[in-house]
Image (tube, rainbow, N blue to C red; front, side, top):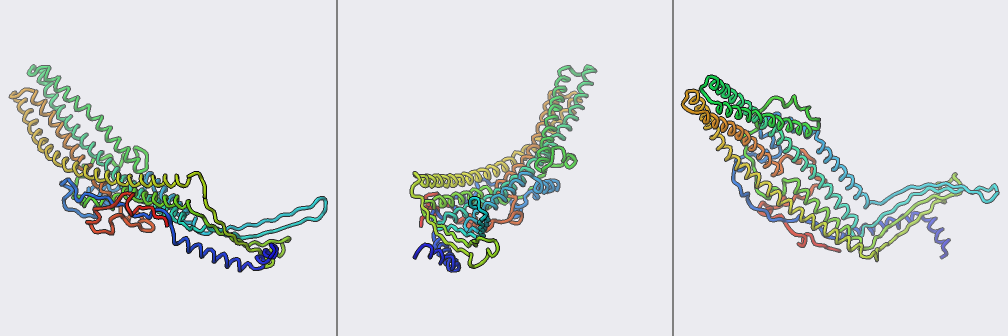
Length: 516
């Protein structure tokens, strides 16, 4: 059969071409659904400690649900309002939301790459031959369809990587949320601690001013020497010198809180002007077991999703080793006049199949696979590093909370004793039964113990905040949307015994390279 006859047959039978195109697409889709080269991902297992090493206040009874909104367990309405305001206006939160939207769009683009591409075209042209008045016109209107048959799963792996990246962005948003709440609470407690230290310093300044006046009167009447007056003066001025630094600390905490709220420094002055006590309600922290960190900590969950993405990209690179099949088809109306363009007689149908194979690229494909495998290994090591760091952070927070509790109890006893000693020393000095050195030492000790006690009370609450943050508190699927689609959390579908063994290295069968 001649080429003209064949073309005429194609022109006259567009339905047959469309049926052939549909059959080819169906066959290619069936083949593509059966294979995907590269490693199939399963969550890595890491052996976790069975229990926490530290036994302290965190072992007290409490409600596990308190971890979701842990700041409310501190019983401070002002802190509650600040946290809500930060969640609504903080710029880091808004940036994390924007990154999530970006990842969502990239996921959509990766999924769209597997679908057929349809494009429309139209053209019109006119020409004149030589000096004649004969003008030739031609018109065309067409619809083209192209589709790459994902025979070896390269596009599928790209979509899986984009999905994992999207899920990692969700965990990134949760991590920002956890850090934001902890930072807001930390700066609020530092502000209240600074205000209480400032109040204690001002009270000591008042007491030492009275003592200085007493020594001055004794000096002027000849009952005391100049040494006592000089000692009273430097004791007084030492306390006075602490006050500017404490005011600076309070101002810095207010300014930081303002920035966390998304406003300029100074705009929260009216809300925080009145000094308040340090939030210190003694509520038990339900720490659970170390394996719970894999479920709760967003940074661990994010690292696991990043590992899943890198594993999928190994398969995406592996697919470049194999042939690529693409199908193209089109329907085009062609005519020499615009009138009657859309007519069955002017319809041309086409169908083509193309097979391409990268046979030689000087080892570029193999090297890219090696690079992606190395990135997968790095992601696995990063996951393990994050898990180790999380356990360390939690253990340190528990230890700090327990030891600070012991320190606070001792400081409370020392402060009470120092107060009694300072009162007695002043009375004895007024009666002439003791020299001024005793007054000086006892007042200095009292000021130091009072300041240390307030600082310890603040440290107790700060360490409690650090423990809540280390445990991944501050989020739930109710206040942040779950993954789309929901992904299996490592250990969530196992018994508690199995979840303490959350798995494996890149060389294990679960992350093996499986080419089909």
